[in-house]
Amino acid sequence: MTTRRDVLQTAGRVAALLVAAGVLPEAARAQAAAPWPAAAFETKSVADLMKALGSAAPVESKEITVQGPDIAENGAVVPLGAATTLTGVKRILLLVEKNPNILSAIFELGDAVEPSISTRVKMGQSSNVFAIAMTNDGRVLYAAKEVKVTLGGCGG
Amino acid sequence: MADPMRIRAQSSGSGATVRVLMAHEMETGLRKDAAGKTIPAWFIQQVSASLNGKPVLSAQWGPSVAKNPFLQFNIKGAKAGDKVAITWLDNKGDTRTDEATVS
Image 1 (cartoon, rainbow over the protein chains, first blue to last red):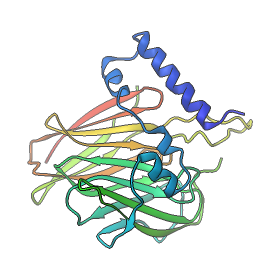
Image 2 (image 1 turned 180 degrees about the horizontal axis):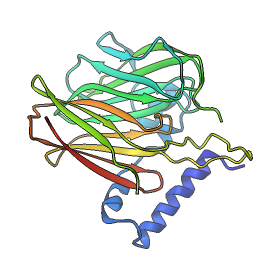
Image 3 (image 1 turned 90 degrees about the vertical axis):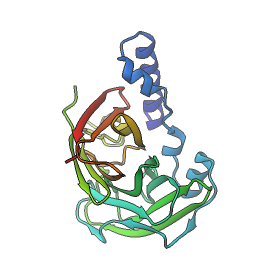
């Protein structure tokens, strides 16, 4: 059986070979050097994720809001957003608790970007979604919301 | 080559709201095709945004971001006429950059 890990590792090796062979363009090569945190994206729980990112356990906070529908009709496209009134936010994470892998997206915010992000994710089933904010002074805070899904978006 | 992104950057208040729609399959690697074979994962892993060539935002995505991903964020201090560029890179090494002007 081919696991997701095999696929990713193979993809990584292929990319490395392509780079070595000079097939990939220069821009792609420069970006390939930036790490994609594979370990973090393979975690199944908040605790494991925080360990993979080397971060402290998050604390619930009212200063963060996670935006999403109460009921999502189509789990393949669920609008999710995170916003916070905190200052000095360097990172926002979006998590879907009951997806095969909990982490959906990491956003690294520059100083010029407001800590307010929206995107769309897939959800396999009704689940809690989390927004985690990490600040420059080392605070890790989260907010949660339950989203009910009537049609899952991860099956085949 | 992948299809172009649709980027809209509108000035609002003291900054600009940027909305991006990327054309990408975002295959999770968990689905199976009709013959029961797993469809390999194919998704955008990295996204970066810059304002007038200066990086403002970067993101790392997993395969659970929806197909044809949407992204919205606000850039402080962006004015009409400023250039917003978005680049993505997927797990097959494909990359695409598109640019829009703040209006």
